[in-house]
Image (cartoon, rainbow, N blue to C red; front, side, top):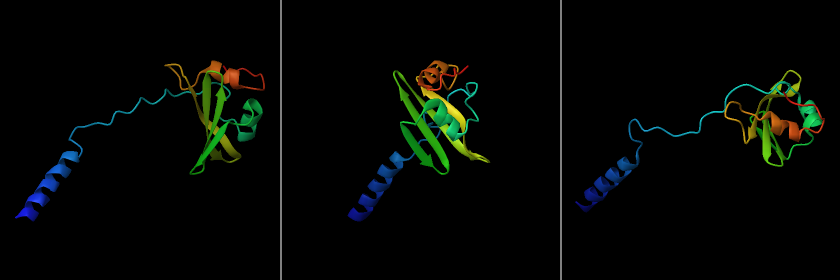
Length: 118
């Protein structure tokens, strides 16, 4: 009898941990789409010329994320394989404006080649 009680208690306790119907996960909203002019499509060597060596590189399933750190902002470039090697497909900055994934001012401060981002 005691064994049945323990089993029943464990079943009730585990069922309380199960996800409730209709429960949703609260994720932050995705950043708006659209890339600053002149960034999407840059090859990895062009990115290195424009911004210098990244502070951090993460490689994951063939893709790469290059992070650049500056005074007051950071930029994350998402590179994916293409016919010529690796190219930028997306960029995000922290902080970012509410209407775009990347702040052009931040990218301009991070550039070492002097070419402004529109």
